[in-house]
Length: 337
Image 1 (cartoon, one colour):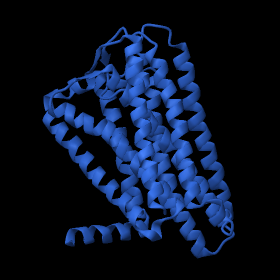
Image 2 (spheres, helix red, strand yellow; image 1 turned 90 degrees about the vertical axis):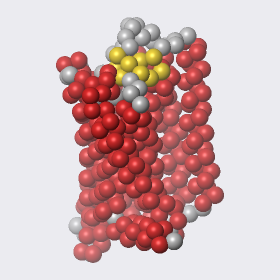
Image 3 (cartoon, helix red, strand yellow; image 1 turned 45 degrees about the vertical axis):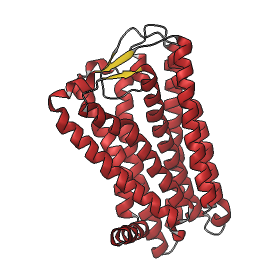
Image 4 (cartoon, one colour; image 1 turned 180 degrees about the vertical axis):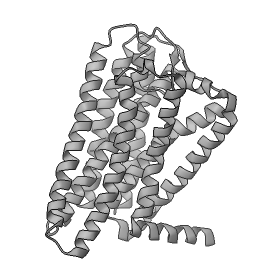
């Protein structure tokens, strides 16, 4: 793995986020909106805010340590410089980003009793949250395709899926996600907001649409098409790849079949769990979140968030034996140094 390429890749990733922040600031100034929004979900947690803040920060720190250790292991171990581990590393970096955008902010807000957020901050958080969700879907889909190539085309796999091609796929994925999510966020900025209360702990474009007093038809159509296309498309590709993979597994040796199925089950568990949590959060808006109390919305959001950010480091750290052994060795080396 070319470390110079990795460094350039993450520098470019940070550059794209910086450009998006500047774009959001310009859009806010252009629309002449200068307001603060109230996070009602955080207000509902104020009676035990120190306890909740402590729990949120503990989960954040533990998750960041686990993800950082696994990413460092993939980065530094030559034997893990394979497309599969590159994609796992991308999932972990994505989880760290989502973790920082929501869980860290939640812990700080509760600790210092902040229950408001600026419109720019809200738009930026919405961009981060929805970008991370989209990247997760696409990465899981690419991982399914990678396993399909490895099992169904083992002789051609080293040329079909190289490390360079894996980075190219991630790069294109980031560009596409930032473009479509950035468009969704941009469409929100043209609306006038007639409310200030967001009935949860974090911002999404869906929550801002509920506060808009203008015509949100374009936003709803774009959001619905984007969500359904992404989710349905990813599910269909994953199902196709694993049906073909299972059919081939029935014809190969028992040892190869066991290894392929082990990796496939790990991927299916993580993807299914993430799919269930995100669909649960998404459809609570689509089906009308007004019927849910603020407490219920906060509980649903936090539960799904914790499951999604802890899932990847826990499952891949436990089930991927090679990665687990290398990570433990790295951790012991650091502790004894």
